[in-house]
Image 1 (tube, rainbow, N blue to C red):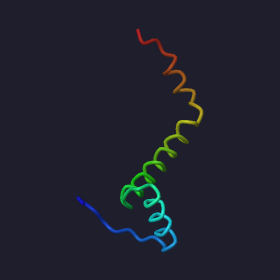
Image 2: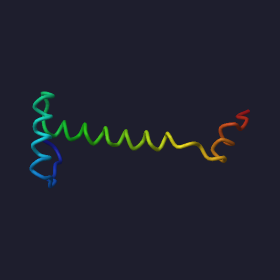
Image 3: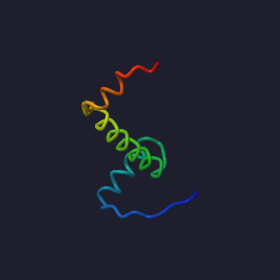
Image 4: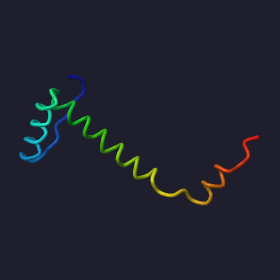
Length: 65
C-alpha cells in the first residue's frame, strides 16, 4: 500500500468515511484522498474568486509585444 501513516479521527467521522467508501465502491484511502482533493480545489476556487488587485489588472493589460 505504499507510504502510509495513521491519523486520528472521531469514531463518527470514521463511520461516515467508511460508509461513503462502501457506497462509492472504493477503498477508504481513495475516499479520504478524494475528499482532501475536493477541499483543496474548494480552497483554490475561493482564492480565484477574489477580485484582482490593481497591479494584477495592470499586468494583464500590459502590451506583450
